[in-house]
Length: 192
Image (cartoon, rainbow, N blue to C red; front, side, top):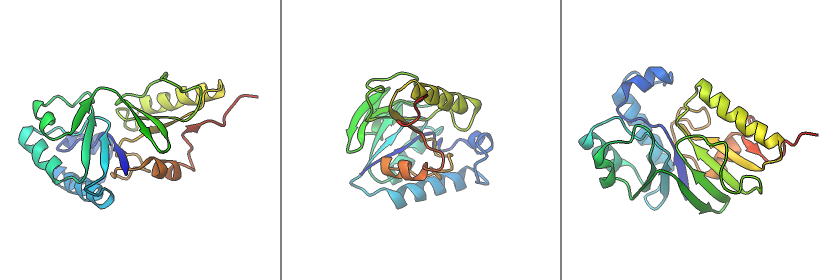
């Protein structure tokens, strides 16, 4: 199975307040993230971390990553600067396209307004970075406007703090199911 998550920000106490995360402190947040991850992900699964894995130092990053199930692939975010990341991720990319059973996934830490094959359908843009900020609303608005122009794609903000993410890596099928009430699929919104 392939899972996706972004903006875990292990060891980042500022994110607890910034995102209104339901944790009293960093230790509680890290423990919950690790437990949720390992409850969902098996050792043979692949997890794409779409940026901003940790605010910790090398030893913190290493010890945390070692406790997480699955093959971990990082799509680098703006806070992924530690040189030790190369020791805990099987691969590190700034941008990545992967074929999945559900279609081609375009992985970038930042939301994009344009990417390959978005007009044909079957493309899934997976991003993070914008948390629950004004920029998240702008990204969604841009995607909705493109859909009204006839573009056909799916877009998911996989920031762990999203209600549908619940601090847990998710598969594409789970993202589709969990976002049905607020669809992020842009293949059926043509302007008349």
